Image (cartoon, rainbow, N blue to C red):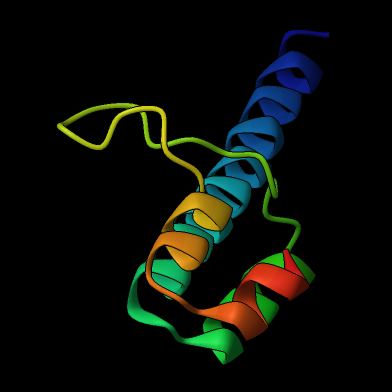
Length: 78
C-alpha cells in the first residue's frame, strides 16, 4: 500500500510539471507573439486561463498579453 501511494504521488507530480511547463509556454508564446508555441502549449493541456502568479505582471493572462500587444491571431486562438 505504501509503495502504491508513493508511485501515485510521483505520477501526480510528473503530470503537474507537464501542465506547469505547458502553462509557462502559453504565457511566453503569447508575450513573444509565437503562435506555434501557443498552439503547442494548448495541445499539451495548458490552462487557457492561467495567470502570472508573481512579479509586476501578476494576474495577467496569455490573452491579456496577446491583445495588449496587438497579436490578433493569438487573441482569436485563445
